[in-house]
Image (cartoon, rainbow, N blue to C red; front, side, top):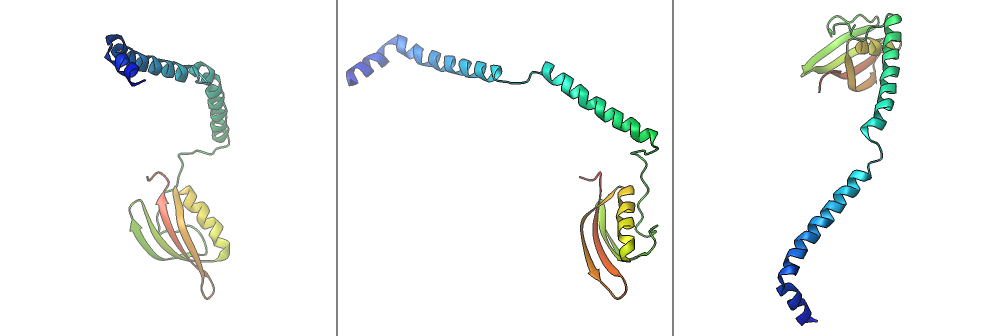
Length: 146
């Protein structure tokens, strides 16, 4: 057995056959990968076009209703337009900050709606009961901030 392996490796043809065999295996693997793709760009195109049509119809419906996605209110933690909410402290950090408020229960939904209209999102918040109101601590960040 050992003699046949040495004889096989000693021949020049076998030295050339091993790299050719590896190239052939790589070519077959590449061909199988290319043919196994289930969707080609031609098949994807109608689906993408249909999704864009749905999206554009939604945007036009929003514009017809008078809702503009670019219409955001400016954010100012000092001037809160929500009744029943008072600013206790504001600590700016990067694209947002930490806001401590004293608020009534009824004013909390309006506060979050105002923050959404201003393009701010609450990344974390805590609620603690005080004497007659709630103490809210909000960690805010701009929606377009990374």
